[in-house]
Image (cartoon, rainbow, N blue to C red; front, side, top):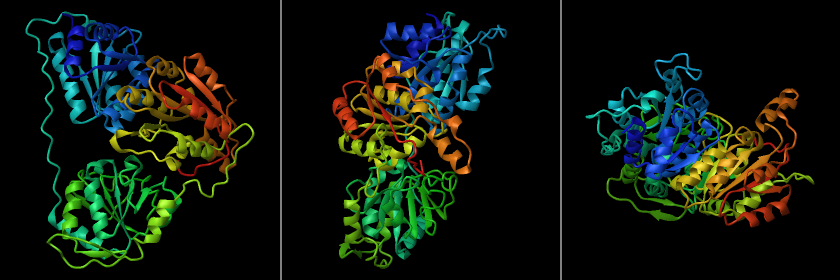
Length: 558
């Protein structure tokens, strides 16, 4: 058995049935062996950066350790942005990268791959010898799963073809470590937080994705203390249906949410990144005291200042604080409590009111908007309004990076529970929407994917339309085309600088998509949007909507 065959056996033994990548001299025999001997699904991308992004999207929606593979030299170099994104997101991912023969430093594709991998992925595992290849691969999987984060497994091309010697390290299936018990909050910290809630007149509890499993306990604490509820964008939908759920907090908060937060005097976050976006650069709740509940002592205050920290599991902390709070009457409704009361809470009849609940229930994110459509372009807000009434509720939503992303994030209700929202913004890289959508669709074929991308963003990786067509995945790719780099236009123009370098000619992206094997429609108005969505839904395969949007409609916080 040769090394590449042993590596293929070991990859499959680690539970892998799908690999993303692009063939080259230094990985082609490994890939073909995975396909032919093991029946692994190989999703062949057109660009190595996109291949790693696809694997990242797959991992985010499945929770599994993803695998991608690229060839040596430029194959790895092209994947740098994707590895950096995965590192920032702590995505468990193993990238099997070929390398040039160590004895041939003059090879045309040679470069020092270790410092590059450490600067991007953050972890590098070299396959040292044929005898240790399987052991080295196991180490890469362990690091990816337990850090978690991306790991580059470096395999020289000549070594892959060598025979595995007798007595080599065996393939041992991965046994996950017993999950650590989440830290219990210190009783003094719990008591202090209970005192803060008791003294507050207008408290709000914010849950992030890290508190998804704690939603019932946080909801109970809110009901018991009279607090209002909100979430980060990454936890959107966690409290859906609750009468005092304000929706998403932060830069993408809706007007009602902003108005209510402006009156808050205490904000308590659970498993949420209180960063510059959630805090909206201090504008969301500038006068309020902010307390962060988190299991990571380095997280609170790292992205934006907080006033106090409670180190502990979100669920345990919420339950412990609830147990200390006394019965209270909120808007005329008594709330029960167990033993351990420390005195009455201040009543909040002006905070949780029937009027507020009715306003939340009746809130329309599109109310008061004056749509600015033209004969050949649709207002992006109008297009999202049409989407809101037609897109399937059960879906995976992917939102790329750029000015266009502000509209679906602000105006479209996209539940983030059950890994159904993918927003790969960690590195601010454009060109992420399409490849992440492919990976998400491959990972969760039980849910259709709706992905929002911009024209400039799509054009950085146009070849992946071919990848999407070949997968046949149920992806609705919405391209919001303003014929520009919209973010740059909106930043240049107020400074009196001509944004001409950020503007581009109109291109028929629907025609390009059709040439690459996709069903595609062009949208320029409301009737066309309705007709295109009616034709595309329900999704049974990939569809592209080329939406020509009004370029001068600006989303201030995207």
